[in-house]
Every structure is written in structure tokens, then in C-alpha cells.
Image 1 (spheres, rainbow, N blue to C red):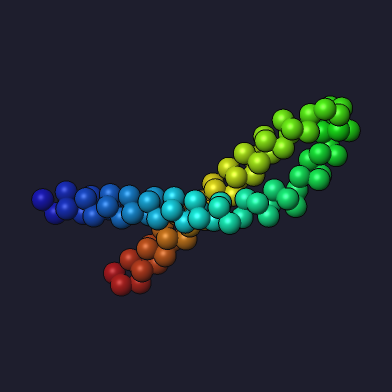
Image 2: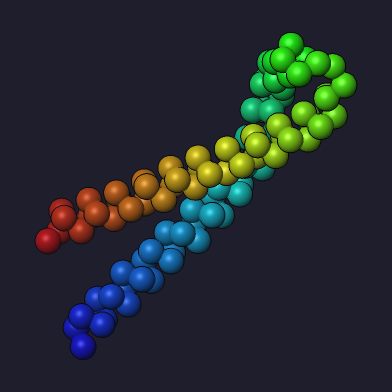
Length: 96
């Protein structure tokens, strides 16, 4: 009985970490994708023009926006999930 209760508590904690990480990552992606995209699109345009030729600008812009949004989202989700998990482990070891 005690083992099942402990596993249920761990599962609830991890589900909460995942949910909070996703919400924070969505908000972070909303605010950070635009600035990250605009700071890097010039380099991407030059790279594609030099290596693949001109005429790929529209495709490159759409693809690069998707890539930057995914990079920001997954970095934020990873960071928040790791921070919460490490914080929980610190609290658990501190009081045990």
C-alpha cells in the first residue's frame, strides 16, 4: 500500500512538472521566437543564397521560422523541467 501511494505521488509530481514545463515553454516560445528569428534570418538568407542559389527566400523564411520556434520551445521546456526536477530533488534530500 505504501509503495503504491509513493508511486502515485511521484507520478503526480512528474505529470505536474511536464504540464508546467509545457505551459512555460509555450509562453517563452511566444515571446522569444520573433526576436530570435529576426536576429538570425539575415545569416540564413546569406547562407542559403551562397550555397543553394537565389529564389529560395520564401521557403527558407517559413522553414526557419518553424525551426526557431521549435528550438525556443524545446530549450525552454528542457530548462524548466530540469530546474523543477532538480529543485524537487534538492528539497527532498534537504528534508530527509
